[in-house]
Length: 221
Image 1: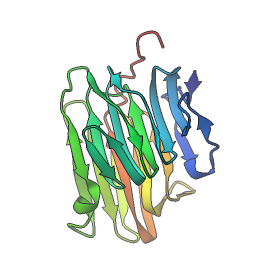
Image 2 (image 1 turned 90 degrees about the vertical axis):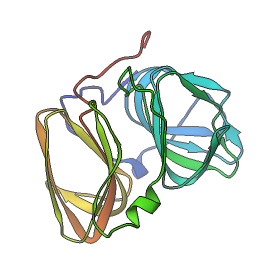
Image 3 (image 1 turned 90 degrees about the horizontal axis):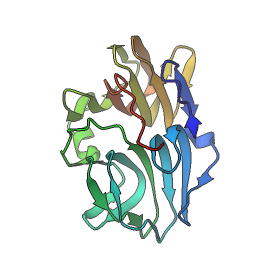
């Protein structure tokens, strides 16, 4: 399967208007933002767990990164309420589910092969530290992931030699002629720039840069 798999192109999606697609697990649905492969895939998705749904225990040979958008996600390692940012590196495993239901922004097979760092962060605490700023969630030689908080009418001007993507969490921003509302997802390719402005309500968004330098496809995908 190939979904928005030309990484030389800009992609902008209003994810809240996209249809839900059933996964192989009853009660778990997805909105596919980009994808290379079938059930083993390099993928970016919005994933929704109905109350009481869960996956069987499984490994993540290519790593898994997610941000809890709503509800509470759970596995044998802990409970992760809305606002929690998690990185399960290549070689990790777990049995995920949700007793009360939840919604996640998920990325698979997008780690450096040598990455072995687990991350568990409550981004709500980071955002409460100041009204505006860039709060790193993860940084290495391969990528930078951050929570960005902008006050009303503030501007960002970011060069993206190795690409960038963002997901709007609260508020809204304008990019080119487009207004990006809550859960809008934007991906810009390598050798580009990101110029945007917060609207009068301000904006909070998740941002990743550097990770499109190499786009890997999982074995057998």
